[in-house]
Image 1 (cartoon, chains in turn purple, red):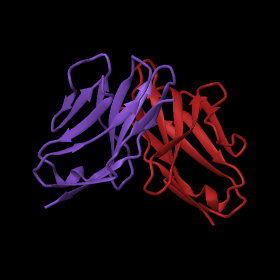
Image 2 (cartoon, rainbow over the protein chains, first blue to last red):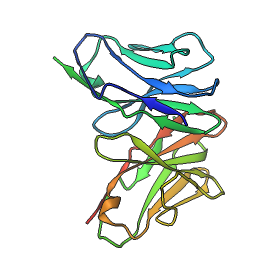
Image 3 (cartoon, one colour):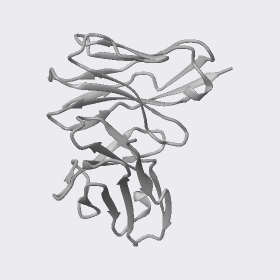
Length: 114
Length: 116
């Protein structure tokens, strides 16, 4: 079974600084997708970034980028120039066509301080 | 585009009653919808996968007679919590996968259920 591990229950970053959230996963599949979702206090799940496993290039979306290490099964999220609005729960998620469903990690709560 | 709505956003009911939650994809067709449950400060737990026109597939440990799922059209799935009890109180989230658009899922805003 696929598992997704987020080892940091809570993280804190100062406004304008950079923070990295960790995620590791376990799978025997070779073709899969990885996602980072943000859940702010409103609890609406928002897709932050996605990565296809077959792509070697790390995905980027404005201030958000990932460090995808396929051999190590690691998928970390870097948030640059952190803003107060980045404060939220962040969930790493894994998807494969075999299971056809998302598997979520336990989440990391990010605090952004002034 | 790709908006998913849920109704109601919150509901309070008495123990023993049934509650229906609707999940709609507003601007796209969704052959597959998913229902999740989220306890406070925890991750999303998949309850079931709902395919239009067929029976839902439930995850292990989820009572299908307790949580009835119907996906009657390409834009609507419903979750009915039957004979609700206080332990069913939780935050329920649906998501929809856009037909022919691979694996991206779009999430609804969630429904908070409180059973007294």
